[in-house]
Image 1 (cartoon, rainbow, N blue to C red):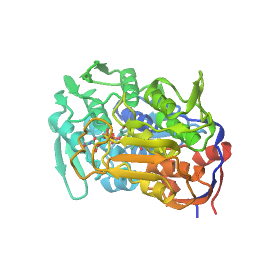
Image 2 (image 1 turned 120 degrees about the vertical axis):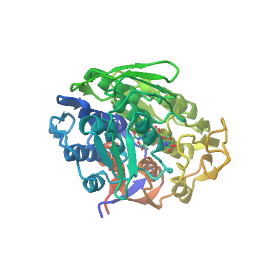
Image 3 (image 1 turned 90 degrees about the vertical axis):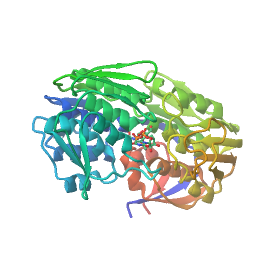
Length: 438
Ligand code: EPU
């Protein structure tokens, strides 16, 4: 079966791989093309399933999307934007949450948007209340129907003042994609300022928007009447880079990640060094390696940017099973991001999860029934097991665990990993991993 990998682990991963544009930016930049009057060109696009999903969704809405042979350059022509059927959107979107970000641009272009109820990875409830509140504040009318959510803007969209209850990445993007062509000024407080959002702002500015970002998480937008297309090279995928770095650490390996960039990875690099990993930054990428000896335990808290990203947490926890002593990890972004630890326990890791906020500041999940803190005790040898991929990042963590474990593991559901890791099986081969499809 193609969806299962049999991994013969216990060997260090060594060699070089390349990461391209960030999944969590590229999909949003593709949606932004809907706002332009002319075509856009996006470069450094990775060949991952999320890009295929957004391509399909844009095509359903009349955007002509063409790619070069390697799929690295996309041309997006929104000259003939049209409404799509919600059932088709639903069928195309699968578990992707991207359709919610079509709302602002479609309201500007067509006066209405109809989106299905949304999925995403199984890492928490993942509501869309912030998104809908934002759209309402701009003047949109949101109506939940049996087939999905219907949104219209009978009196147009008007600039507004909004404070987010939490600096949500998606909600900040929703606001940006809606405000740039709304009538008048918009001010967002407590905005997310992730590098992927800053690159989206770069794209929107190239299109003709007026956006300023203040030091205190406040973003101000002056709406403009029309926007043009853009030409842009996507920033690099810092989640993928950190995932391979964690794989190097967990397998006592040495991986050069071409395309990895330092400025977006500061918090990860500090933590990597504290655990005992070493890295060398050059103009083209970053070499991550295990220098020998014991890894050190740490106290770690995930946070919004510029903190340690939640998406870095799961791959790094696998490496922490090989660190000497007790590590404490407090997950403050998603309430349910330790599901992957069950499989690691089955492979011999000692990981306990707790409802309490351990090792850091109390977060919004404390005193509730969310197992969002973990204590990892190591080092423990990992042994091969039959495991099933739970979500994108958790799935990659399972791969790392199987690569670190002696013996042959079977990892089921690897199709999920293609959502965000380009050609990961070719990369595993390039790094000397032993695996087969059975
Ligand atoms: N939240 C709400 N209501 C909302 C929106 C968010 O309560 O309407 C909460 C969420 O439940 C969560 C928190 O706010 O607890 C943060 O969620 P956020 O909106 O920031 O996340 P997102 O935009 O849905 C993106 C990435 C995630 C990444 C997070 C945090 C994309 C497509 N997804 O999600 O990436 O973990 O930001 O950086 O950009 C991944 O790549 O595997 C992934 C899950």
